[in-house]
Length: 222
Ligand SMILES: NC(=O)c1ccc[n+]([C@@H]2O[C@H](COP(=O)([O-])OP(=O)(O)OC[C@H]3O[C@@H](n4cnc5c(N)ncnc54)[C@H](OP(=O)(O)O)[C@@H]3O)[C@@H](O)[C@H]2O)c1
Image: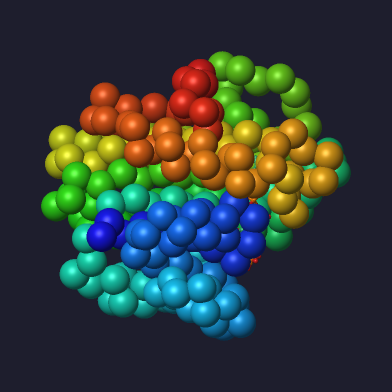
């Protein structure tokens, strides 16, 4: 039975990833910030661990809990959009977005990659087309865009480090999805996005290492 690890599984895309992998017969390890969300995930038959991705101690504890695991598919999903205004971000806003979207990936990817090596596993980060520099369609949400561009850079470094060891690392845009972050006016339902993300990851071979893909597999310029 393959194992999936979903980081940030309390709601939205992360929760739907848990639902779909479980429905497909996978063993699922899921993390959430609150104890109540972890209990709910455990009630769905996921192995759940409490994790705040902005806390180094919390990430270290996850490392201990996952010792010896072999993980076929990982989605680093936890993310923050940050301020909806277009003024200067405050220090607090900057730290929250950058720590959640970038620093967490810098800490988590090296921790998870060795657990993927033995099973030639795949690691996906939830980036966004808003972080693309080559396909920049607007200048709103500057902080979020910068954080996802930086996340893409971290992902590429992981692809270079772990690709030769058999791990396939991919940055994904999930579409504009109807979640708390995407809003009710978004383009696609969460189950459609997640079906696409899972299918694209399943199809991806080593040649997909270090790519930036839409949920349907279409390449996106960095
Ligand atoms: N929805 C879209 O249209 C869209 C488009 C492009 C990219 N994305 C990306 O896709 C990912 C998922 O988005 P979504 O739409 O499902 O967002 P969402 O509904 O806002 O959910 C965000 C998830 O991230 C978790 N999270 C935030 N900060 C965390 C922290 N410090 N530690 C642990 N977990 C934390 C949240 O947990 P809590 O419940 O504890 O807050 C929640 O599970 C994000 O990375 C987002 O940037 C989304």
